[in-house]
Length: 186
View (cartoon, rainbow, N blue to C red):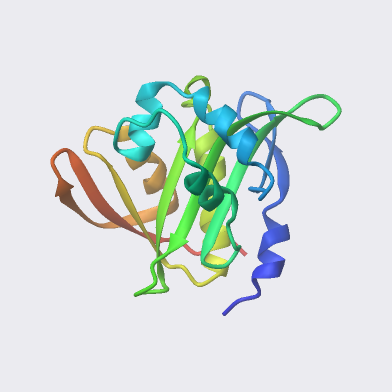
């Protein structure tokens, strides 16, 4: 298995969005549960529904523990934070994760959520591009995703980091799709 400790640091980076907004993409922190709960409550009910595929009003303590304790090998999680002029994080605007399938270690389930006001500004693409590169370093070659059939945004995002291998109906209105990841440049 590739050296995941190196991968942890490789995706701790600062960049700018197409509109010039400075951001940091980094690993989610185990001590970030309260911060994640606050960010969750800033999401619209529609955004929560798109991410969790059901109405979701709050995150339980167990969910917060799972979401903030990514091991960096089988469970990868990155957060995007907006930076102020001094380089301090002022707002967490997106989270994405890749959780390895226990029965096939080359496959992981992917999920992403971006705050409503940051949609279509390049946040999701920056986040998933970095997460895909990290996942590749840990041996993941395909992402499986579950989404509402009318969620064109996630379908566009996933097509930027992988090639759709299949898409099938999972349950009424929900699709399961698998994307072959592209090897990161270099």
